[in-house]
Image (cartoon, rainbow, N blue to C red):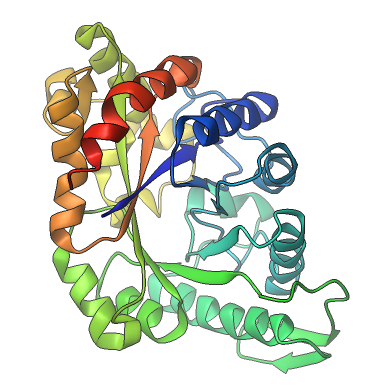
Length: 321
């Protein structure tokens, strides 16, 4: 049976609200949770971008059962991999073994803020590979000195290490990233229900490993309101990762999506309160070979009502998958 997760989407709620939401999701019976790690929202209408790692630390203390995961953290510009390793080890301790570290090559949206430019995909993948090497070496204990093409580490050591290091998930969107994830990751991560991604991950060494997907939904008893909210806050999602990874800010995403219509959104995102439509959205991932799917309820102010509905209606229906 596919595991169903809850998304703490930092782009659409403040830090205290995000923690309240995941506590409620745990009580409702979601199997796991994931958290975006952004410096900026995609669109100004979303309106938030708290520091994900502070939110995760608070969530680790406020919950007792639900697993936590970054979905995903970019360890190549805004964060140095030695710091990512330290943060992840600390989260694993705070959560008593419930944390998984999702990593990816990032988006210009979040990484341009440090003023070092935005590398092309090949370079980003090289950087991510080196970052994973450093993080794993630090998780193994001892002092790490590293001299790579892109990163250096000098006498780095994690003084507070969990008995079991966090598993590492790696984001996949094409052949090269699937190969990277299969070889270097414990988990595959993707946001498209594409069996080719799962197959490529398996062939590169990911056979038998979990594959975690994510799907946006817009629950509301008023379907028109659900569609309007999804269009206002989530129309960026259909741009695809070759586009989404490279646009630099909310104004660029607004301009790039100005011709997206509400009808386009209604045809691509489950909106309203028809359980079958939500189940079908998850089924596409199950059929593609994913083992876990995290749902993103669009709209920071509709989380609690959505979670109550999911507990009563959606989660029981998804058990049939």
